[in-house]
Length: 287
Image 1 (cartoon, rainbow, N blue to C red):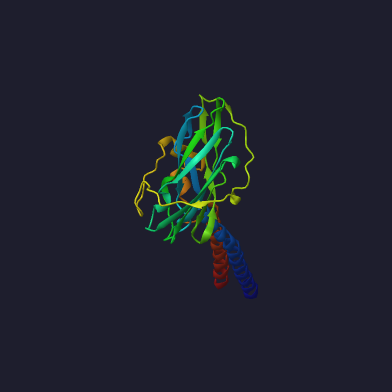
Image 2 (tube, one colour):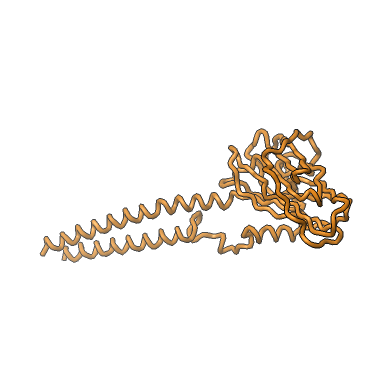
């Protein structure tokens, strides 16, 4: 009888050990996935016009402020460089100038260098900016550039768009992050049908020239206020999931997504039950 009980105890112990090993094998990849998910959620940026629609008449010139919003990367890592690419239909619009804003001046004081390129035939304008030295990069919400836009003299009543979907942003060590963008719309002569799409060439081949130092809205190291209105902020937050509730932002276990936390809890309970069963068998043997 004692030999049978001891065999049951050994079997229960082996089952407990096997359960612990399986739990560990399950949690290791889940924890890695959790870390990657947390990192990826921080590594985004948004580029959009401060005013989404601007009214203009044929032959008129208007300005469009473009703002950027980003908290940088995981662990407070800031953005080192931004390449703003604005594309349009050259039969309706022309970007005649691009001025840099103070976005990259946020954070630790450093120098900001810029280059720009205007290719009207290609319907493309580019403004490349970088911090040198990076000095932990920049984060925040402010103006990244101002576009000067001229409407064609013979443009019909229409809605011509300026897109920013080819824009890029990089963290320290030239690590790219996803950029979400919102188009700017120029309502020509009261608006009308949407202007036809234009086949833009690859902007990477566009020639750029250095930009002389320009006055911006903030001193280096300052935290400039956003030029966006409240509607633009709300629209961007909704598009990028910014309307999450407090419960959505808080995980069941701090730093872990809810599925991973649930896996840990369930695994712990299962191991606890196996341990309780093994203890019960041993107690029966002692009696």
